Image (cartoon, rainbow, N blue to C red; front, side, top):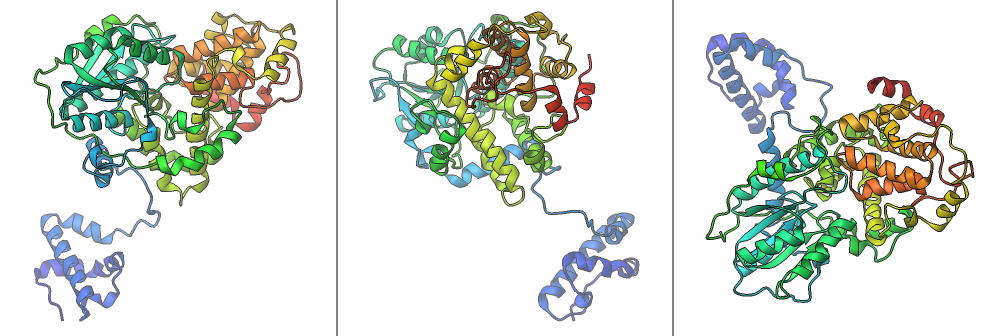
Length: 560
């Protein structure tokens, strides 16, 4: 028989409740006396543990034994409440380290990269490689930075990251700029810990980046990808401004399947692009290798960024105040992702179109600035396929297929924000009904200040203005009512895009432009029953919203 040496008072105090604990360890009641080594060992360890607990705190030891097991507790994927922010980052870093030690050991999918310059070779006498960061403002899980580090490691030269800050960017206000700049502060800190230099250059890339490249004698440039006109123009101008001897390559670090690999042409809709994405998705949806501490350090240390100078430099609307619900930075984005997985993902399939329910991810601000990777998100979400199959499939449809459909539209259609960019049937029906009477008729100021007769629309506008976000289902209704209340489809589209880009943290994005184009111009949709003003564009009304969700509850939440 296995003997356990503990003090007699301890045994007297604990023995009466000991049996209640045994089942927690999957032990039979006779385990204390059994001669089977494993059961005996478990009992011995258990008693020693309880004895020690009793001697240090008798009341807690008794409580530990006497409390029944939590029958409601289930084995769930959830964020560990005891884990601090650093633990979150470490957990993801372990996933990367499990793949390989560095990107040099990783089989990099070259289809993610395209050469933009005629020259392909990096000069042997160069003093570094630079990654021009714009759309993907993060360090880890960034294919563009990984590729830049791969080049720098091969050349055995320092690695630099440069962000060119424009004075203005379309209708972006301080809300969006502030979120971006605070996120870049985290980027600078993380890069510093990896011995990678960070440069914040004030001005347009084609002007300030060539000067930086010349100053540090960079031998190659890697940039990320954005299909919007302005960033595409920056890339073209930069290539023309650089010496012909410097190679420039672009990496799509934003999409899982690179935009140029998904389709070379403008896709008609989700049904045509979906099979193309799923056909190659698995070859691109891999775990990331880590960005490592760079072994080649520049001889001259780069000065720390003057963030006050950056704020002084920009010239944006400062009346659109920053919001407190979305904390900038990769760390905060990953926390939001894990919160979504633990609390809201299970409701996504059934309740994502109900703005009164907590069912959506709320990740769009971090996606928009590239502070977290959509690929990382999908890798995480897929861990729940066995538990929330329908929700996982629905999320992948929205976050991969629909998102990359928007990328395709903006990449292949230069008129992505204009009536000229829609289908012929939609142009015709909007033209046919351009002269229809509109009653009431609102100007931009009335709409912006949410002073229409429609309490649901006003509440949606207030959510956008105050919180910097607008629920996806309501965004459709919101945009369609603007078409109904303004003097022409052209004005309606311009107003919708203006409000979205000015107030939304996820504005100035392919998703936003396509959302407005779908609602007002019928992009990626079909013709419906003809009616005044809308023609054959899909119609939405107040009663339809009432059938889908509690309109009164939403309106109450956003009262003036």
